[in-house]
Amino acid sequence: MIYVWALTKTESRKIWGICMQIGEHEEEKKINAEWRFLARRVLMICETIDRTAIEEAASGEASREASLQSAAFRERMERALGLMARIREGSGSPTKHLEDLRRLVSGLECSRSYFDSHREIA
Image (tube, rainbow, N blue to C red; front, side, top):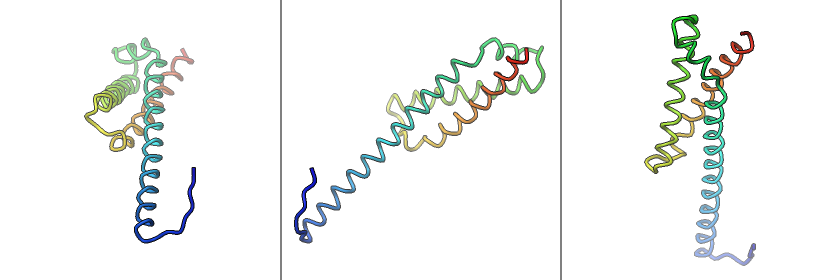
């Protein structure tokens, strides 16, 4: 419900405080929604990358690029899962680590496209 009345100085401060709380709450909801989306994305990417392609790339049979891509994927995956675990435990803030998770998801997408393209070629 929206109430309208003539504002006095004390009432105007109260209104401003209420507006700030609503704005901060809405921003927090957006951050949490983006965080949940990115976390689901990390899990989906890690699930869809073919494990045999990663193991093959890690072995000496594959090219140097494949072994570097495999190492990069594993590092990004471990960092993303560790970051998500810290947030879940309550030892971190989604707001503080949102940019890191965005970068990790972007890197995981690159790894996935590399492994997907090599799987299609083989």
